[in-house]
Image (cartoon, rainbow, N blue to C red; front, side, top):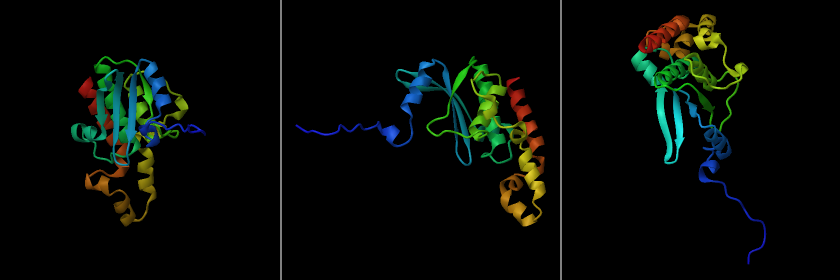
Length: 195
């Protein structure tokens, strides 16, 4: 008979750093739909997911590619304004589907204050979906509208540096200086689609 310490092996997805099972259990026990916000360097995905016995079911989703193709977003899809608009779109879709509340599922990595995850959440909140969150974690309106990008563009004096750092904006015929106005236009077109 073997004697010694018994070694506990975590589930595979926990070992891979993909799932925090304790957190997931608490979110599922709430009985509410989970608001899942996932961000990469170049895109964001926002989903409303319901846990069922057979597995998770995606109720609806919105991506930054959707705001780019359907609503005319010409700026970068990997920034805070794009993630906010994606959250706003997901929130309006959820409201039209009859969802009124959800609970935020940030995953295994803890986001920092004012991050893209909280920008997407703020978009969902502004669309009228109730999600519990501390207000001080949400990004400021100046960053959501992209005014920080416009101010940075004005600060850079060297034209070659401007072209290098903002090549995606310039390729899409959008001056970073006009980002706050472009943000408002796209937000209004999303509102009109669900108005």
